[in-house]
Every structure is written in structure tokens, then in C-alpha cells.
Image (tube, rainbow, N blue to C red; front, side, top):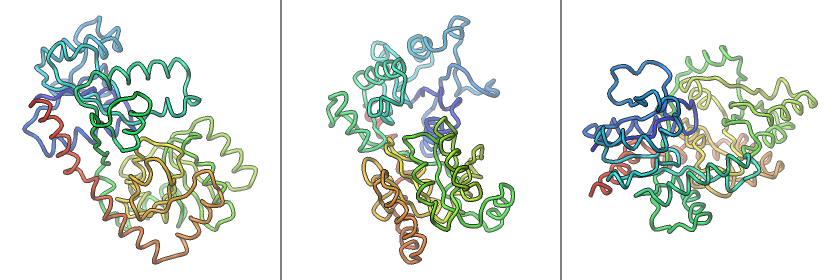
Length: 367
């Protein structure tokens, strides 16, 4: 099969949808190398000359209007490149694929713009809704990354549940490699990290709820490391840290390589993720693969990602979060069970299983 991908975020996003795209293509190339995987992108950072798996706009007009190319004109390029299936990796597909006889599949990650409209500008919501709705009702196969996302698609678009498959995300292989004491010590010295700490990873925005963790650990004898892209919300947290004199207890960092980040996960005593809503929550399985126990939210997708041996709390309750952190840190047997059982559970997200599910989707589409 020749499978084409909407690879804009594969090349241009460093996290989130970019990681999803890169990991999926990587595991397919590893486990099903007999297929050809062609990456279509409006632009690219770095060299692409000679790489026949990368396809860019060919004409000057297409380069002048990359969004139009990606949403419309790309279809003619897919025909010329004899693409059998086009996979929209981030909730959208170009218009007119079926008329050209090209099968299509779309991955839907989340519908946050509908669940929390106040977090988005009105124009952005309109654009996202139009693209997602078109993809859901016109793709030959819709794949959700979780049961939660599947429920949201059914609720917001009145789309038949039986037409939606669920294939979970995997994560970067760096998180599956055991880290040595030397690697940890090097990183601790390089970034002046505390000897013991609680970790939170994710963009620092209201939905992710990092402020709750800061308030929860304020009276506990454990530092907090928050890693993620900063937003206006970060300023509120920093102001609070300064007002309470927590500068030597709460550390907000960013800019790590994937290898460094995976090592920091393995150094943490505990991973805390009290997000209000996610399509999946990839940092949870990154923590489980790293052998780090997880405390996360008790509703939505989080029990799907965290499994039966993570600790679940009401993300709005600082007291409940504080109690959970204290309980896990001070109960060695419980913490060890969370680590051991969490590692067993997270094997369901292994690369070979995800690749097999996707290959079946593709082969079923070809018939």
C-alpha cells in the first residue's frame, strides 16, 4: 500500500500532535516496512532533497497559498503519487478525496474547542468545527484516540458510535529505556534539579491545572518541578510562588530534549497530572513507562490512560490532591505496587500492538 499522511505537524510541531505523528509513522515503518509511507507537508524545517517519502507543494501558486494546497489542491498531487489511502493525522482531511478514488482515515484527538469554548477565539472555533465536521462525515474511517474522544464525537456531532474505531497513542521509545544513576546525576547537576521532587509535564494553561499542584505541595516537604510551554496562566502561578516565598520549592522549566525529559520522568518520586480534560493524556503513559507512580484526575479519559493502579482525585480539590501526594510519598508498599502494576498495565500501549491495529484499518479500507 502507498499511504499518504498529512504531515504538517509531523515536521512543524515539537510536541503534542507532532509527537503523535512522528511516533505513528515511526512504528508503521518499523513493523510494516512493506508499505510505502509518504509525508505531505506545506513546508519543512531542514533538508528534504532526495527523500522520496517527503512531498512538498510543487508550484509557485501552491507555495503562495499553502493552506489552500493542504485542504484542496493536494488531492491532485495524491493522485499523481498513486496514494491508496490518505491519513489525516490531526482531525482533518482535504476536500474531494473520494471523487478521486482515494480512501481516507482521520484521527480525532479531542474536541476541546467544543468542550471548553471559552479557551478559544470564536474564529478559531468556527474553523476547527468546520474542518472536524467535514473530516468526520467524509472520511472512510474515523479513529478516536480514546473512549472519551469517541463519546465526545457521538455527543457533539451525533455520529454513529459503531463507525468509530479506537486506537490509543503510544509514546517515544526514550521513555521505555531504563536510566542509569550516572545519567540521572548528570542531568540533576546540569539543571540544578532537587534530589527528590514531584513532577508535572504539559503546557502550562488553565485546563492543565498546574496551579492546583503548587497550592497542594505548599505545606508538604517536597519540591515541585513543572515542565511545559508557558502561557499567561504561568504568570499567575509565578506571582503566587513569589508571594508565598516558594522560589526554592517550585521550579518551572522548559526546552528539554526527549531523552532529557524521559530521564527527568524517571528521577521523579511521583507524577501529578490533575488536568480537567484531555483527549488522551500522553504524559500519563510516559510516566508509567518511566516507572513513576501517577496521580491524576478521576473522570474523563484519565482512568483509561492511567489504569487501575494509578491514584485518582477530584482535580478541583486542593485538599484531596495534597492528601494523595502525601499518601503515596509516605507509603512505600503502595508506591511500589503503583510502579509495578502501572508498568504491567502500560504494555497495552506498546508499539507492536498499535502498529497492528493501524495496519488492519488500512488493509480493511483497501478491502
